[in-house]
Length: 539
Image (cartoon, rainbow, N blue to C red; front, side):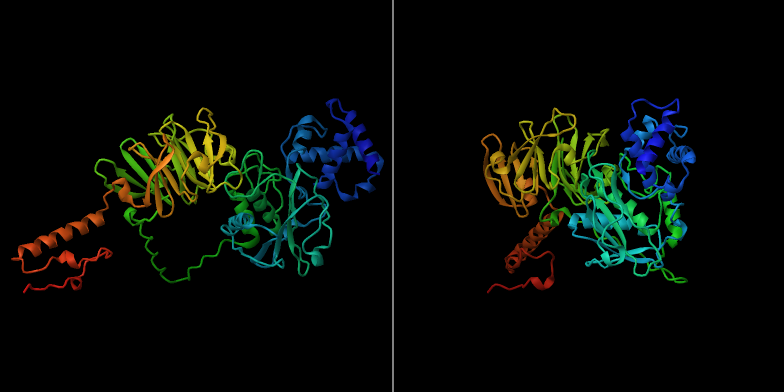
């Protein structure tokens, strides 16, 4: 029977003068299945009389073209066919034939979710997707360790099973089609007792499973899960290209956010976000922000970079500017004050160096920023992901440096080194080598690398530093890491030293009748107490 419809569909469009001769019968078979799958043709199409089928097919094509704002008059053309080939969600566009979308919602606002057999990165990405919906509505979500949750996410391929067989049946009614086209699908909530919504993600697609920006050749799991969770909450597709509920996967899926109408739609179903403040009570003052860390109190740092006559030291979201002449420092300053283009919720700068061109390569979490110096402005086309530069998917950056020889190295995953091709405008990795082969004598566990004004490279670990001569390729010295190796003057230590000197002078001035207070000074003390000093007269 399906063959008869395809023949009728072909005859219908071949009768149109605008049909493109390059469109094949296989294309017509594809478009028939597409229109049926996504709701433009009703499932009772079998009952349509033969004399009316051409009109029904043309109306379905016209509805599709209107829905996606495509040019056309209800006939198949190359532009429409190309659009139908885009990767998308497997959920229907048109629900009027079977589903009452306005009634599809959960009867509660606290829902549990479970990601079947997911690793830590996938769980974090799923949590971020649920957070987007809870931030803008009265909904709250809780992760369940067991697959008895309200919403279950799982990886599936081709003809696949449901996770909750008792409620949803054994086989999923909508199979996947391998790489391309359908990326995922989800179940609308129903009034069925014990209903469980499932989100199935096609495991045959190339996925970027992290929350940050995705490479051009991979789909964002964060974006896709946010979309499919929308279906699990009762939201259908819509025609707004800015909406996270637009059916076609956009080329750029980062950053993932809800547009203003997505927020209106989810609040229409579940209400606005409930504030925790109790009514008619003066809210308690916000707690003071945590104190900024002091540079001299740190036992390790994330990165060190020398620019002109200043040294910049980073730790988490902070940066200190150190005067190389006076060895004094200011700060800390939030790094975002210098670089307002950094992505939201970044955790730390993992490495940075100045390239021979003068630009700064700044590694922040899983992104790399190319920054024009001294303007501190972002170069066009950046940031890029580590994977776009050629690093493996699981790369964790330990440190980076441009050496005195002008070569740029990035240490990652503890014992691997990638050399950046500075002649490549995209700064891709030219080659990979083991850490021992590139920097003999440097152990695993590097936390930062920097080129110092004494002509050496310095490597730090959590507790040690290693002074490396790149010309002899040897470690010339090593020891416990301390900012004093950089000749930085710590104000607290300087004040204590001045107090010690003052007390010694007082003791000596008192007719030599007192023993030196410094005999009783405990170098481990961080403050001064009168009880720490015992005054004795000489006999």
